[in-house]
Image 1 (cartoon, rainbow, N blue to C red):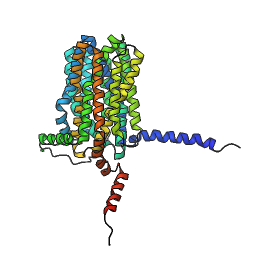
Image 2 (image 1 turned 90 degrees about the vertical axis):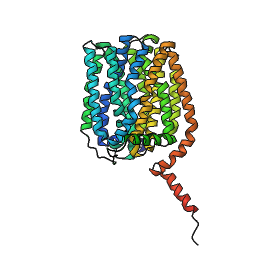
Image 3 (image 1 turned 180 degrees about the horizontal axis):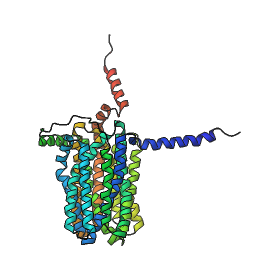
Image 4 (image 1 turned 30 degrees about the vertical axis):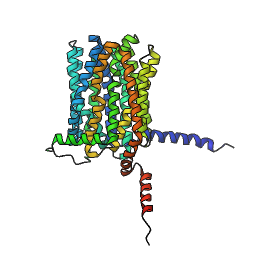
Length: 453
């Protein structure tokens, strides 16, 4: 007689697998977020094609590591200068409408870059000017996009999953975009990468237009003092240690570690003796690691315990850069790019999730602008510094020192974790993430009350 459990076990395993997949993608049950996820997934592939095409175009036109750094600086410095003011406006304006405007402007920027390149009139100053324009757009788009996530998700418990899925989406595009971009560059040139990016913006614009958004908070009046609101947001972020320390580590890693991306054309061409396809493989390998990290975060059931991932993955990112600086062969370089991609993405996404969970709603736009200032705003100085240092001592040594800086920053942050946990626990209790702690506090309070006589 057959064992009845032999047929039920595969069914149960299949059911568990289906439930696991449903859990990982649970934020997609929200219609607005599902629309955003679909449109943005298409658009981001074009964005990453443009990133690799821009790097290769600059290197082809100039052959200069310094100018790679200059272009990176030009594209990112507006985020540093304008992000705090943009954050105030994001808290005042309709984020949904703002994102539609920024996406239309980004489409125009990519189209201009495509036309200039395809007609053969592109010059390095064109690239720098259009990079500045895109940086101006990003100064408003990025904090608005980060703060808008909470408006697309109906259930607060799905917020961490939505942020992790955002990272998955970015890094799936990071995996596909450079690979496709490398093939397109080798076949027909950089201009068609820019054109594909311009066309891809129609997908995200359509998804935004199709949404139905219900405002969840009363925004400050338009006659409120911008400088006063900026000072209020800055004081809040600077004095609350969990927000301040997360931002400081992210800023350090972005300053000394993130510029590895602007030096990848040098490694692909001079160190590994490859071409645009080699550059595509390196960036794709970094995307693989980042995607794996994002999916691991998406599979987590709670934000609890996420803090320890921040220093661990920052250290892994730094160690990966140190090891990568010594490699001269493609296959170990690809493996190390997986490590760096995993480390940086998890640190960035975990930092984002923690901040989005603990921040006061009326200051979300401002805090997320500081997040973008730390993440993208310090990167232009890092890009410029990395380009200059690489011009003097070479790209490998530049990455070596950057990786060491990331490891040291991670060690510092690890020493602050016990204090940060104490500061965050009351917030988690208040919003219901730690109900068992709240219950324990209530029971302790009851026990401390003397019995009635």
